[in-house]
Length: 313
Ligand SMILES: [Zn+2]
Image (cartoon, rainbow, N blue to C red; front, side, top):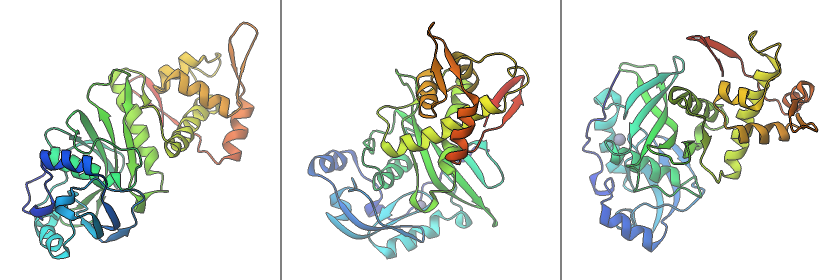
């Protein structure tokens, strides 16, 4: 269901950072946004912004951001006017193309940083408010963005982006994810896991083991460790019949899950569930895996079989 975002005549004065402005802004420092309003949700930014000073000023009391296209303005009248053109009920469409349907409520859209440059730039500017280390606001062309889209009832259905991850079009290090963010109002609902899971599904499609870009943030590592532990617990505790009776190597697990062997080993060490014998072979301790997931309330992943392959999710 390909659908391209229509050009909107939204708050043009503050919506389109041109290249010259962008470069200048990056040199002059960050903008302080005291409060950001995404749609009708108010949030307090955790970090300084890289919005162009010329467009929003150096200190912004309230920044209004469109929840459909991420255009921004400090003028409430402009955002109200913009919404008339951007809401699905008025013909607006979510950016990118539908890539994967998770369930009736959630789906993943793919947005190209080059062809949907303004959308991706504005989404990154918004994301920067909540990420200390994000630095691709104006250099998005080399990235693809996978957005987590929520579909709500309505005619036409209302769709909005709840978070995203970016991926380099060409990663020399075979990273399958550059940065990831679930927007603050939607955190704590397991949505980050859905995005991480899709990054590994992409690795499966590409037949290339993947890993998130390093260095990984402290918060990112917590989310990833939980995801990896969940997947590994599924492999160890709920093995498919084809692997149940044979000892599993790290390489076997990596082939099945597309998780980098180093990430598997590091996670199993954290779980205290791996031992190295005198010959240098690893031994997995299923009881320790069980203990870890029980104590840390980690969900044990389940496998599905598709096209003759086993996939833990
Ligand atoms: Zn909009």
